[in-house]
Image 1 (cartoon, protein in one colour):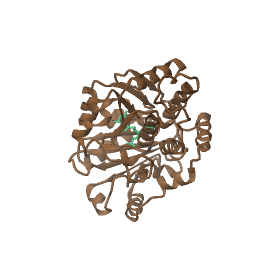
Image 2 (cartoon, helix red, strand yellow; image 1 turned 30 degrees about the vertical axis):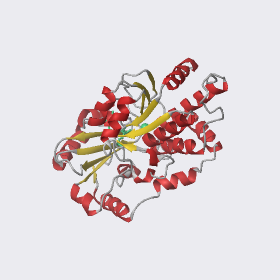
Image 3 (spheres, rainbow, N blue to C red; image 1 turned 135 degrees about the vertical axis):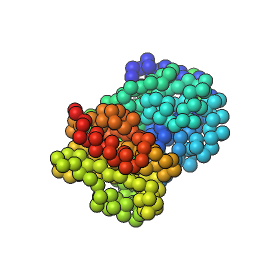
Image 4 (cartoon, helix red, strand yellow; image 1 turned 90 degrees about the vertical axis):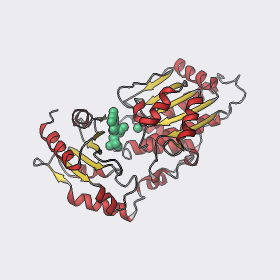
Length: 351
Ligand code: 5GP
Ligand code: MN
């Protein structure tokens, strides 16, 4: 991201009246953290900005500053469609293809005349944009957003926003922005246990701390929020997951009946797929979750350690993709059939 390229972005933002920030469906801490951080920053520049997300975010992100302002596409579709339509800029955060925003929202984004600006750390960026920063080597989109914000602030120091009277000339980065960024970085790295070996991650954290964030509290707000039902669901899965003969792979299924039994709410299975990886010698863990509404739709999550390529396995067997150690996909069949696909994938996959 060169200085000139940041200046291009500054000009785009300056020229826009209405700015909408979007992220992928099933938004996670990074999607929401990066969106809220950027929204707060842009609004401090004096611009109209809204955050539109495809569907609900998990409860454990509710405390993040700015969530009250979020507009859910699947809840307020007409309003969201109108806002996307009349917007001058649509930020595409934490996704590489428009399809990742879901069927209806991706249509609204694609048909909007707005200029698209993409900031994302997934592989294979494929959105027709006016400005793109794609950096798969980054731990999170939130960190990327922070770099962008810092660069735009530098533009201010250099006097490049000078002619724009509405721009707040003070430093616009504050504790709330830093909190959202830290939350996104923390959630996308499993609290800095993976995807976080770049020393720059910790330089960024040092700067975020200087804005007064409470990192211990952020950790507890996100990770120590189990309901009794959720804890019991985890106990149930830990009892029943299946381990391959060689002890290197594990998988489990989560049926609709089980979801009901444990009063499943969105987010209850978040992180569960990582648990089998705590077993010595385990390389791969897969979860198969039945959709709560649609029949013959199974959500697949894959997690791995070391050089086991989850994304390749997901592309080959589960209609999905993702990162080396964390990928997702979907199967259009019953849970029993999905289980067979998983057994087959584990037996056949060569890497
Ligand atoms: P999760 O298991 O949390 O749904 O997904 C794990 C990771 O894989 C996330 O970083 C997510 O962005 C990515 N991912 C999930 N589904 C897909 C997919 O269908 N295609 C691609 N390219 N990435 C996915
Ligand atoms: Mn991310």
